[in-house]
Amino acid sequence: MKYIAIIFMLMFQVLSAQNSPESFWKNKCEFTTDGSGKSLGLKIRVPVPCAWEQSEGKRPHVVKTFSYGFPDGSSISQSLTVNKLPNSFSKSEINELFSQDGLRSMCEGTGTFVSGRRVRIDGLECAEVIARASRNSPVATFYAYMLSYYLIYKDKIVVIGYMTGSISDEDSKELFDTYKEIFQGLATGTIIMTQWE
Image (cartoon, rainbow, N blue to C red; front, side, top):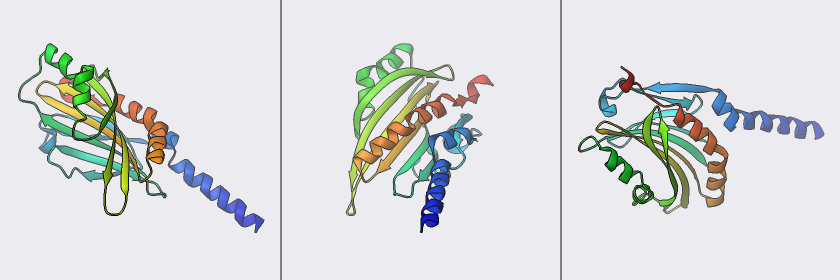
């Protein structure tokens, strides 16, 4: 009986190591758009953990989604979205959009604004927004924490989104806190290759 417990503990440690933040960071792949279809002419390279499952975006502007499910039913995901703006934004329009009020308004209809700040990714103006959301279903309530990056390039807005989800708000928040630095590291590795051609 003692040996079975030891074997079980070793198996658990091996399985846990396979889906740890460190293993995802060390085993990164790259997803690259060629400018066709939903990428609206943009060539974009985004790093993503190799272990995450890749799928086509189900919505019109979602280029690709990547996800990973844990044994307890919680999950983490990454998405790449490209939208066309009515026109190229001026510096003052970008300043307004990326103000605290502008960042707060980005969460309307999707969740509750937690925090936001301006950053730069691949030399471009960018906003980082953290939000929280919950969705009710007949089976359970699903809680999500989201980290989204909004990059403006000419008349396009590229959104790189990361999300943790669970039927427990506490578990979803803990998962988000565990993976937040990995999400930030992945996002900063994004390259809008079109601008360098």
